[in-house]
Length: 163
Image (cartoon, rainbow, N blue to C red):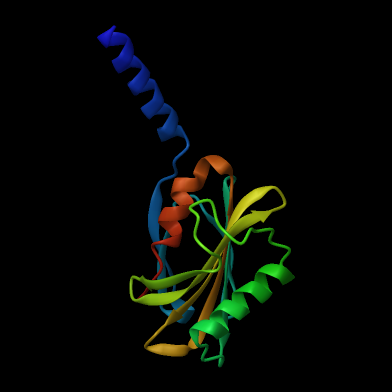
């Protein structure tokens, strides 16, 4: 019986391992922003207007917007407006029971708001991040992923930091 239990645990661990991607550090030099993302991302565009990258499991876009100097209420309104404009479907409460948009007090020195929802049938999270040292630059982050890559998505979203 004990051997069967160990075998089940081992098989489950192998299953989880097949649905995880190897994350590496990436930088967006134009804005001195660093984050983690899958090592097999194909960067489609990286310039002063957008950072776009995809692989078979997820798509990530980062859009900078300057000159807004948003307050918390301004950030909340801006991310709701962007989510609605982008046809992101979301509920007032996310799966953890948090009211959306979720206030992000400190992500590695950044602060902002987040909304979890779906787009075209895929789980999608959107973030609005601000570096308190440079509040005139906002980063709108779009991350859409396959269900089984939820843990990778969370790791990516928690990895953003100023350089």
